Length: 165
Image (cartoon, rainbow, N blue to C red; front, side, top):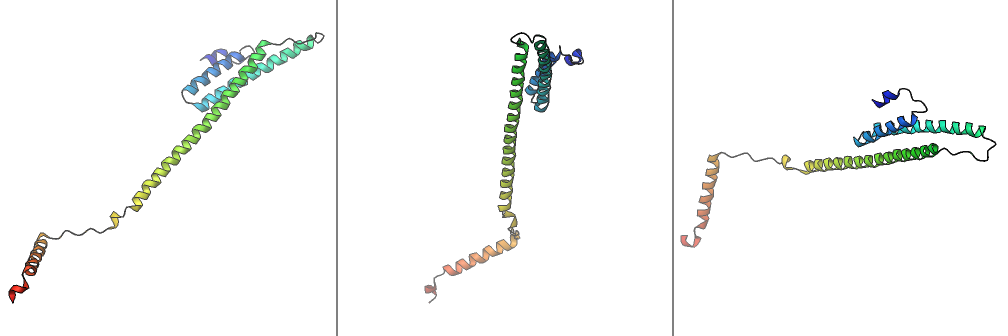
């Protein structure tokens, strides 16, 4: 692993290590491992800030030695580091905002699932078909006897009472 190659960070390797952590963070983010990615971004930012503080201390030493000169000499790497730190800070903030948005989407999805489950339970509660007693099947003999009785009654009623007189 590249981190093992560098060993303990020195002031010369801080920026390279920060680059490695930044690349690791990008790959973790691509794999949707957001917590690991954020920790890698934070580590890269920390290393860049260490390098920045080292360069600032070096610049102050140079400024103290050249106090009789009118202006201090700007260090281009220091400006680059400030830009990189700002970019990483924005990246971390974007990740936090995206995490909050995805969490709100997850909450919304969970709420929808809960509402759907509650609606399905309501349908089960409103279904009263299980409470209705079903008729027992009557034996075939009694059904046939009832049909004969009904047929005889209908024949009896169909006779004309005028004819009997």
